[in-house]
Image (cartoon, rainbow, N blue to C red; front, side):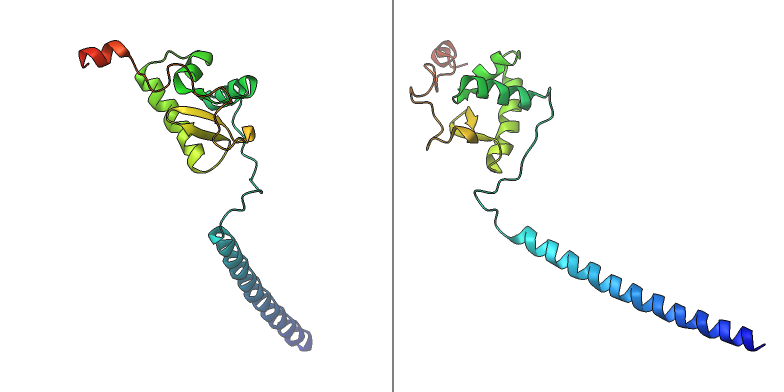
Length: 149
């Protein structure tokens, strides 16, 4: 019977150790969560951009490739042509919206002028190529403007 009491005592001692360890682990997890929450609240440092990857084959990856090949910002209509999409209104809106979300987060793309997108890596002050905006920049369709449609 002495052995049974000794085993019961050791079992109880081990349960106490486990409870103490679980308490310490819970405190450590809470501390870690607090540190992660604090880090999220800090402003992002300009030079330390986290690498953002675009899935290969997506429209945004194609646009990035076109801009890298061209070496300058392009109007959304030109981007659509070069990626093989028709320059229809729905495609313009979709692509512009997707690119704008990256622009707002200061990731990958810039918008140096309305409906004109470039890459952050171009690095010029306004993002526009040295030769200026595209020839038809800001002009939708002169026929539509004249007829009011």
